[in-house]
Image (cartoon, helix red, strand yellow):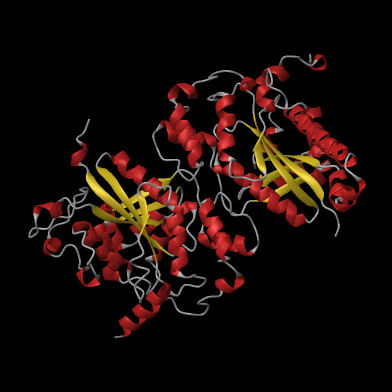
Length: 282
Length: 270
């Protein structure tokens, strides 16, 4: 038997609307965990669900209070996935990178006074050293105390749609994508026959950091998208067994999804698009 | 309002183990039938196949029934019925349909008796209710996308049984993207003839949680959470149901229907 202490600890972070959370979101975590454990080199110690803030301005996005409450209900029966409302309780929309920095920082020094100001990039000093392909090392920093070396790696967990969203103009900043794949890493769940591989090949940044992008193939097709769930709810169709029972009950109790709720933020430009378009002009 | 025909959905299969997909088939079918405006789905029945079916990796019906019961604990309209699994041998699906149809008639009859014995005043107030109960229910076989194809498998079905299933009872068939059951019906004279009795339900979320894949995952120690209910996962772990050994059960055996239907050689073909 291998010494389990030698394994690199990994924390998985999923960012998104979770409007509402579905069994698919929960499956992404399970698949990613299985994948890392099969490598024999990693141990997944935690999963974090971070619903986006209301300021994201996505069409049909209902209040974060409800989305967080539903995610909490959905993870009640999980002993390793939890919900964090730090991102959604910020007054403005935050880049995913900043959410990653915040949580990485929190893993290094679990201090409740942690704030956005402390959310600095995790590596700076060793940036220029040569790339070492095929090696998955914990992030090492020369000038920090030894216990930081053993801090878990925080990786961004996503479906193939998020990876492909890197290609949408103004949605992501190039330097953010670079830092995400360089300093944190991506875990992308893709279905057989998807063109995620091709997408990575066609992006220079992603290709350069492909060793830090873990592609996990799903073995059961799962397309329970939140959009489809909302549509079914508006049409009075059953969503049973697609979302956890507690989530369904919560949706019914608060009558969350209606034609009106679907019109929220209609015609409003998505926060990242606004911000990044503005920045690129300056 | 036009009165709706009460309808019972029956699903036959291995349920080895039951998955969320099985339950989704019921939910989708009920939505579809209600949307037609002509039916009121009053019950869903899951009937796990008899151990004598002889399918590879089929674990004991005792466990399969128990798992289905756990999975359906939270449903207010779908239930498990162990009758089929409790017979001495494997029996044809058509006989399971006949049994449950007779049961529903018997239940209706006893309800009528119950009404008759009540005092007239009470009866008057429950008139509308008793009228509903006097409408004969229909029983339909609920099946997945690939089911219609099995009609073509040699020796799996008796021709007269297929006829009885589609003529007397009817089918509710949930199709998935990429499969075209309508084409199947067109290609079969028998199915075309009774296509008014075959309901095709479109699946709006791709859902292919096959029990075979679940068993693979379980044997390899992979997570099946959110694919089958937590209570079923706990039951499987507790009884250590799916193992390399359980998967070898009935290995190399012929399915019981194939054994039965292929033994009596048709003299005309000789």
